[in-house]
Image 1 (spheres, rainbow over the protein chains, first blue to last red):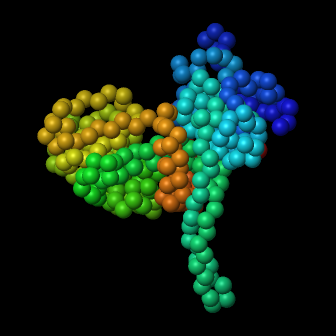
Image 2: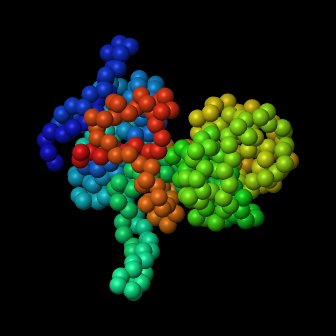
Image 3: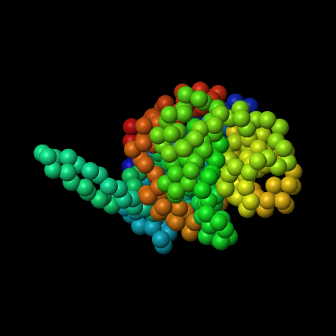
Amino acid sequence: MSDQFKALILNQDGESFSREVKSIDKNFLKHGDVTVKVEYSGLNYKDALILKNGARLVKEFPHIPGIDFSGTVEESNHKDFKNGDEVILTGWRVGEIYFGGFSQYAKVNGDFLVKKTKRSFIKRVHDNGYSWIYCFTMFIHHKEY
Amino acid sequence: MIMGTAGFTALQCSFTTKSTREELLLGEKVQSVIVSGASGGVGSMAVMILNKLGCDVTAVTGKDSNKDYLKSIGAKDVLNTSELMKDARPLDKGLWDGAVDTVGGKVLENILSQTKDAGIVAACGNAADIKLNTTVMPFIIRGVKLWGINSVTASIKRRQFLWNEAGKLIDFEALGKSVKEINLEEVNDVYPKMLKGETSGRYIINLNR
């Protein structure tokens, strides 16, 4: 994992809040036993409320918001996960009381993670007067979760 | 992250409305369902999922311009939210076998009064109001069930089951059209607009951009 990476840091100074994209290192991540290289994170209404002023959900600053994300496990001390596992996280108060997904790396409790699942779909291809029907089974992509 | 927390919540609500009554409570088939806040992330995915599960979905939205989009993702009928903003009677004409409510308030009050015998109303949002002013009548006369959905603490077992179902129930191509991909730096421009209700569709952050 790269030593320095980007994250959106929410900070509070009295009544005022700041949100800055900063370069941080992995020692900044303080919770959990699984480090995930984040590919995508959603910008939800709840995230917007948290970005505004913590929404009384964030207890400590500085904070990394982001209540959901998908990505790939990079380091794990959890029995169910190993390097390279593709995972998704929603809920469990990540992005509220724990650091969340608005960061190129996130460290979370492995009990919160779900492993990537599959999807099947049928595609019809017309080629030179012939019509082929393909059935694909593939993993759902990070972006799609 | 096209689905994300919203998609997971929609999966939970849809399975509660349909499968919980049919399989867990061994009730009758759930055919006609209503989804409120259908233009939102949770609502639009619930429309899609319930349609795929075989229901006739009535989508409720305040945005008439979204009618064609909602029909394209699986709504059979589209109602304007104003039709569910009247003062609810204790019991109204029963119209729905089940419901997914993402907005709360008066809309949920009316849905409860219009739900048929033993229907499940899955409630997961407060976009309209956190208050719920209802009577016991739908519950004690028709056995209507108001089922709260919280996506934060759902068990891992439930999550694994529902994410496995997602692949069969979601049309990612159709959903992808309403998604905007941004980078971390752009978050600060977008979130205030989202709070003012000026955004539509889903925003996802690509951390590699």
